[in-house]
Structures are given as C-alpha cells and as structure tokens.
Amino acid sequence: LLFSVAMVAVPESVLKKRKRSEKWAADKAAAAKVAEAKGVEKKKEIFKRAEAYVAEYRSAEQQLVQMKRAARKAGTFYVEPEAKLLFVMRLRGINGMHPKTRKIMQVLRLLQINNGTFMKVNKATMNMLVKVDPYIMYGYPSLKTVKELQINN
Image (cartoon, rainbow, N blue to C red; front, side, top):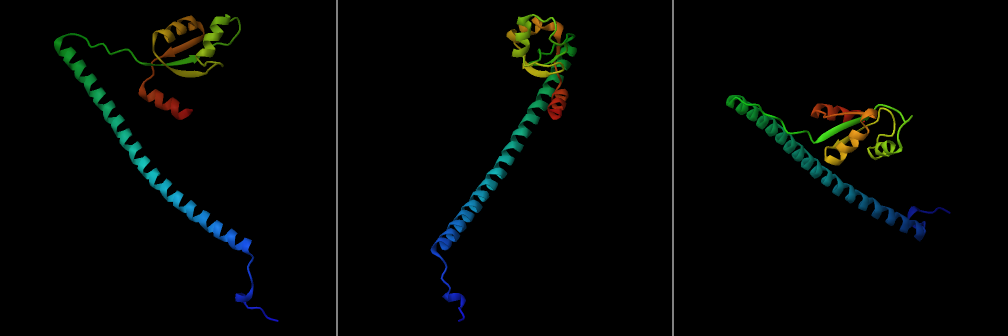
C-alpha cells in the first residue's frame, strides 16, 4: 500500500507546536524591530548629549581665557575656582594604624595599597583626608587624567 503525503495525518500536538513556535518567532521578530528602533533613537540622544557636553566645556574654557585676559588688562590676577573633584590613592598598609584611621580608609573605599577613588570636595571629605594624610596622597585631576583613569578601569 502506498500512502500519499496528503493522506498522512499529522498529530494535533505537532500542529499546535508549529503554530505556537511560528507565533513566538513573529513576536520575537517584532520585539527585535522595536528594540532596534529604540537603539537608533537612543544613539541619537546620546550623541546630542555628548555634543552638548563638548559645547559646555568649550564655552567654559573660552570664558576662563576671557576672565584671565580681562584680569591681566586690569592689572590684577584671576584666581580659578577650587576644583570639585579629588583623586585619592592609598600608599601605606595597615601596620600600626589607629582603628579610627582604618575605619576612615574603609569609608573612603581605600582597602588596599595603590587603590584609588574619585571624591567630591566638601568639608567632610577634607576633614577625613586630613586624618588619614600620612597613609594617602591626593590631588585635583585634569579632565585628561580622569579620562585616562576611566579607560584603564
């Protein structure tokens, strides 16, 4: 007996599975299309934000130059505002360290030798840095230094 392809009955569970998988594939394709559109939109937004930051930095640099020139023209000096960001790095180990100093090091996230963190400059952080001064070094990083440190980590 020869059976034709049309005569072979396909089980209902197989048909349901095919239909379900086709529906899932269609849903997945639609979700991917929506995600791609969102990604393109997000990239545009990020690019615009980056351009705004560049423009802001350029205008700040130009303003600084103008202020310095105006001060020089008036025969005075322009004193730049104090930096808002610090880079703190641990230099020494734990031997002979006072418990309070050790706790401050934990708060500053300086747990190992050669660990470094960025911090906001305010009265509280400056007071903590004075207390742990023999164990650390700190300074005001330039924009170039910040970028290099972020790339390395």
